[in-house]
Amino acid sequence: MKNNICLLLILFLFFGYSQTISQETNKKLISEKAITKGPQKGTLLIIGGAAQNIFYEKFKELIGGADKPIVVIPTAVSSKKLDKTFLNRHKESYHNKGFTNVTVLHTRDPKEANTEEFIKPLKTAKRVWFSGGRQWRHADSYLNTKAHDAFWEVLNRGGIIAGSSAGATIQGSYLARGDTKKNTIMMGDHEEGLAFISNVAIDQHLFARNRQFDLFEILDNKPELLGIGLDENTGIIVKGDVFTVFGESYVAIYDGTRWSAERDTIYQLPKGSKDFYVLKAGQQYNLRERKVTNIRQ
Image (cartoon, rainbow, N blue to C red; front, side, top):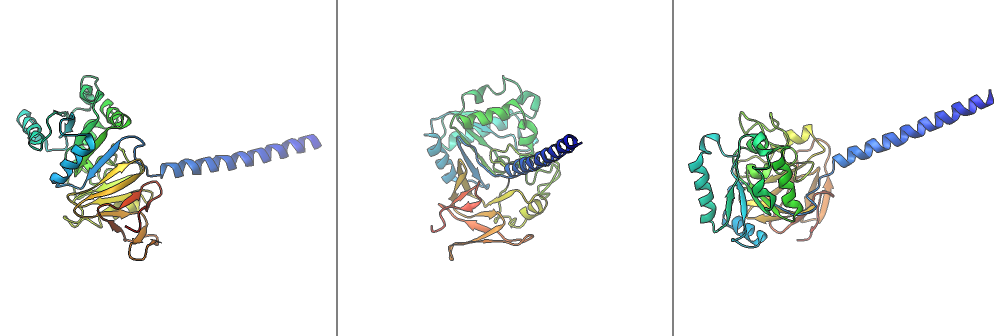
């Protein structure tokens, strides 16, 4: 009888301990999913639309010169425009910006994007630029294909992936304005991006189009996400888990805090707050820690 009681006690204690371990493991997995981080290799250049020459010059600097080969992906542009004539003109537009070695890569068919033949230009590529337009078109064509894997390989080789407007939003994990009907729907029929930055929603044309409060619709439903809003001709250069602001305007940060540069203080906001703060050129932010890193600048 005593042996049975001891056995039951041991089983009870073991079961309780296992449950505790299981709960702790689940909490850890959930918290890890909520971590925002950049690619551990390579660089991202993420621009809020209407990119002017300073960004093409910065891209040349980052890639090592105008003669370095680049792959340009115009897939986000309206289907009516993407004929052979348009693609040739698109290539020429990069020549006019001073780039001398340009490959245009495009498909509307994810089956084609999943072939070895299609991804040949990406096999050795180290420099990719995603166009503006509608970000769901990038997702429709490339998400979870061999091309998607090849984009990651570009970063793993220490390369750079850039994009403006739709080419910015597609680099996040949550696809803001991803609805096929209209771009004013924040949570639409496409919600998954290429996730070069994890656990983030990226919006663009922010102050130019008075969009600075739109990201709250997503964040109210998905509070684990970090929100980043980019104004026009303004962007971030992401290396590892830290980005630096570049350009003429501001980047808005939606991380549940309010940073006061004047008071050198970060304030925790109450739940449901519709507050954000802005960073200017040269200021830096740690994605993983979710805080400004050079506060005194």
